[in-house]
Image (cartoon, rainbow, N blue to C red; front, side, top):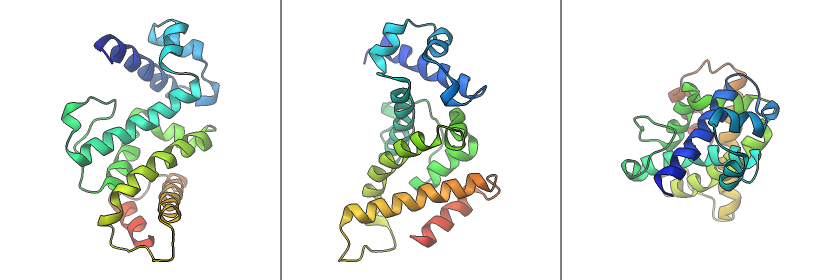
Length: 183
């Protein structure tokens, strides 16, 4: 993408994020997003097929940030998420959730959470695949890898749900340890 496209895309992301601080995702309209982003409807649809696709891209932006921080290529690409990445990719995600970066908690706890969690889990599976070799627990030989990846991803999503239900009382480090102990 050229600079103009990146700037437009970022404006749309920032508009969604600003609106999420005011109301839940399902109550936000494309019209509100484009008004706040100061872009035309055609421009919005040139970048995102639907509002749901915008939500999916926001989730993918978070995971792109985590992947690039893990591989050391974060300096080469700018994301709407920014931080000093810890060694654990799971802890990295938990820290973003705790900081409520870009109002991501509203997506996880709001009425649109099932859709966001679906996108979150899809991206998480790719992250888990990259982490399998470094995990302390070995996959039982009888299990297909895609089953194992799905299981680990599901446990992480449910760990996050539990943490949100408990008002994020525990630190990201504690939740990361809980998660690592159960997988």
